[in-house]
Image (cartoon, rainbow over all chains, first blue to last red):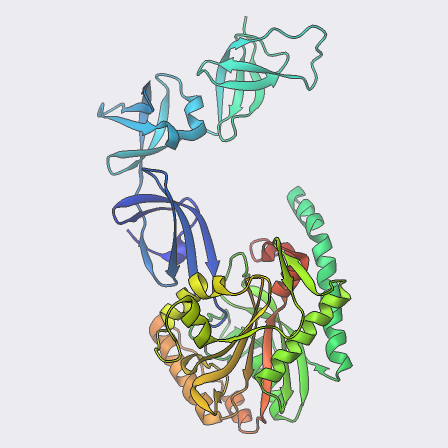
Length: 190
Length: 309
């Protein structure tokens, strides 16, 4: 899809020489009397390599047409996380490196939005917060009050997060999926 | 008032205070030399047609992209030394060093050429630096820059041959000129000194006169400090017929490239018949303030950018 370089923003996906890139940074610059120049820093979405490219105003780039699919998270196989389209039963893998922090918030059977480039799964869209059950944590330290004291807790996906001291095994807690930080207790376990 | 705006403006306060001081010191510099501070219209029926400067329209008039034409009309009427801080508007220019509305300082001297104007610039910037408490150097983004005079001069021809391997004054390739400038020539300038880039190719003379001894180049110079393009100086073209020809070419190019019909600045061309020999310069004040505040981006030295207006 031909796009004016001036319309390219952070996180625009571009196809260059057949490879898919995510734009990490756009730097606009312009000699006072000259043409606008756009310096793009981009990450290759397959191998993670970072490249810089310079474009003149008026140049066209190929913006990737991305689609989204509702898929189910199945399981992990070495460094691949496997998802399945619930209608077509087609399966797609996304690498651990691409998922980054998002890998910590996947429960088997969970429905997620997968970002597709053609028939290749590129990335996941997660809700901003997710509720997860605590499966392991130390019992509150003797003398600890319900104040700023934090302790590590493990949630059902295996992710270890700092929580307040009052959190117990069985509690359901809310976590920010962008930062991985504990937000609040949703319910108390029995 | 949203909380983030309060925090943002509090964070910028120190820079905005310094900005006000810089304006004051610049006015002192010019007033002490008997320059007259002038004001010219921000909104006008015609502006200089320039191929790569896109103006904002205001009904069927234009917002100033530079005060140059009106200041030259004052010179043509006998004013000898004038300066102005002017709000200028350029569409689509937004980035670390750009905001579509910005402040330009322009000054002009009768019977002067671009070399004289560059000497003014050196004196102005070192004078402001001195009053702000800087001695021989300033520090910008981790780099110490020695601002003692005179600043190194390099011609466009020398700079491109050194950093990009070709000479724009013998080969006309304006598109390559801009990309190579950003990618190769600008990064090739000494990091610890200002740079004055002189003698632009005749095709990029704009409103400058050609060098009488070498008509392949224009008497145009630009000043760079810390990677920032600060100012653009001319020995002003005083030939109305030649200026009209350049404007016609620019109007044609704008029509072809942007499908925009720009009017010919007739009143200016009429006044230009009486324009004496003079030199002038446009200096981006926001970038000068960035330099003196060690600000990473233009946003840090403005109360409200276009995105925050």
